[in-house]
Image (cartoon, rainbow, N blue to C red; front, side, top):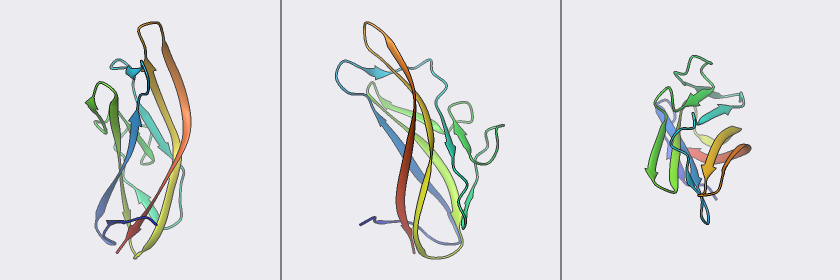
Length: 114
């Protein structure tokens, strides 16, 4: 069961986390980007030039935590208490000593607003 992560009627942040496995690490040069799917009752507040449903490294939403971990902050607002699921496409890149991998992954997160 999801935990309470937001308060209805107030700005909220949900983090999309990337963890590189094995010999891979975060690609510091890649322009990480998350494009949220539009959802009824959820108002996204991205500041990327691509629109309010776009969150990116360029807009300052991406944070590298350590060599293998990073997180994209997804800013949103819900007006009433309840369970919400957001989804979208996360554009990412991880590298090893031999190569870099570019990928686009569908992701979703469920949270509660009180």
